[in-house]
Length: 64
Image 1: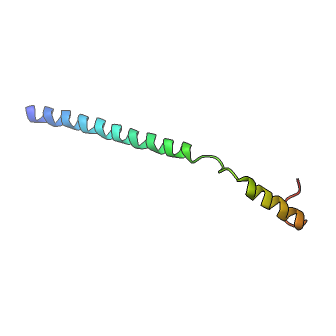
Image 2: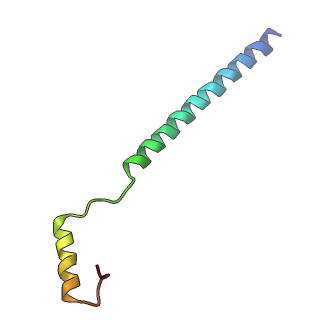
Image 3: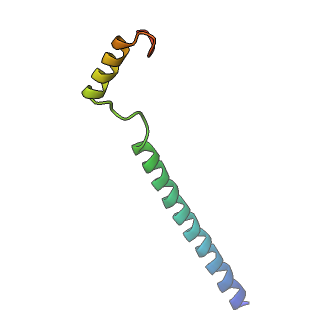
């Protein structure tokens, strides 16, 4: 009987530990996704290059 109670208590502890580890992993995923969200900044040089290319070829790029 004591063995059964001890096994039950250990299983409850393992389950809690598994939940804590899962929670930590999910929090890490959220942190990573929030850091990588959104568009990267486009440098001034790249924007200028795109503008020059669109002016040189009127069939290239969308009208603004």
